[in-house]
Image (cartoon, rainbow, N blue to C red; front, top):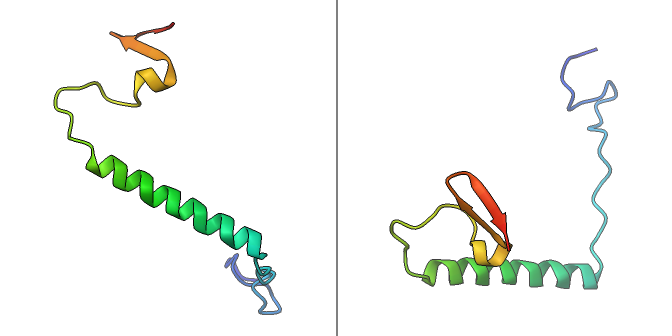
Length: 73
């Protein structure tokens, strides 16, 4: 036996070949990639914020944090 987890004693990698995608799955993956690209482009187009708070937008997530105390409206 070897300590290499990638191979089995028979030399087979032990992985099954990937199943082919259905047209609907391929379309969904393409749409998701397009949404991610659009979100990255929109984020890059926004002006840089100087001196702002770090993290996610509090108006979107409903949490405001000041000096370690978070309040939820």
